[in-house]
Image 1 (cartoon, rainbow, N blue to C red):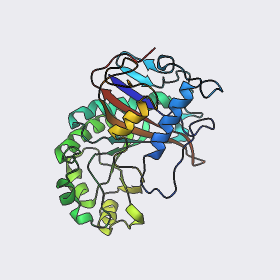
Image 2: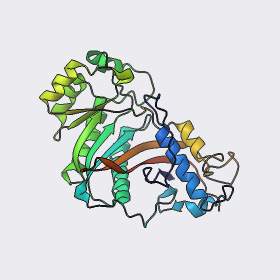
Image 3: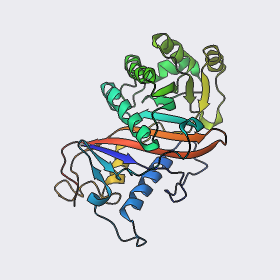
Image 4: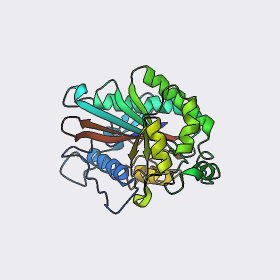
Length: 308
């Protein structure tokens, strides 16, 4: 069974209360807190904080997925015309998930964002491959360090799987669903190896500058030569670990998962996060973020229906 988790729009006045410590350089706290807050708000529609609705009343069982919480079919999407916005989406492919699933994952994630915002295209899609860490202090050794990594995240992401994934992204771009494509954590060596295999070149390279390090000159020069814009971020590399997902959905959280292996009070099985997508819609002429949120997808093994 697929579990689709959503935060809704975290920028709304009545939306989730998000706490982001200013001292945290790289964190998934916004995602986790927003999911938790959205679950709690959906479970407690009244002013009584102890009044928790049964899972079956605030989730939605679709033909192939359980939506947690149920998506609001009356959501108006964006307030103004589509041309007034810059819509940026970042898709995190998670560690341990085979690259063969990414074509379907990419389309699933993009379709959810388009439906949520009530639009038919996005301006920029940035993809984050697992196991790739940008070392701002040593761009030249980046490829060697990444290949020899032993973090168990898909060995780390091999070059062939990245090219295979990029082909799927190019197909979506050619259909008009995505205006521009981008990558994350690519140094100059990886870019130089990657670009000859692309039909649609990445227009953005988003990198994490640890401790405010300076961008390597080699990357600046190469990006300028290839007309690739360099952007920075503070996203967590492993944005949704298995343990965190189980805690969010367990008895102490959303109450979706069974309390014990032999209980019949929720879904049984092993939870496996598949991907996370972050979307941001900015009003161009004001530079204001009007809509921002996350979707995540997890798979369950053997399961039963959520409790009534």
